[in-house]
Image (cartoon, rainbow, N blue to C red):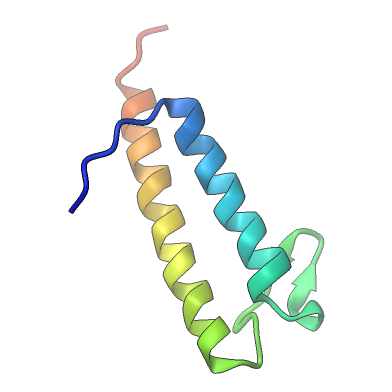
Length: 74
């Protein structure tokens, strides 16, 4: 494990970058539609697995970001 301090903006940027990586690098064009990647995302099994792993990482980062922002006061 590595401890890393990031701002909320940096966490949001990471989720955007990971999503873009899935769309433009890992997925096959015929699975892309209006900014979304339909399952399985790629005919290449390794890329499809990386898509699943990256989506899981996005959910973890988004969960962390949500917990930070829900603790803010308006």
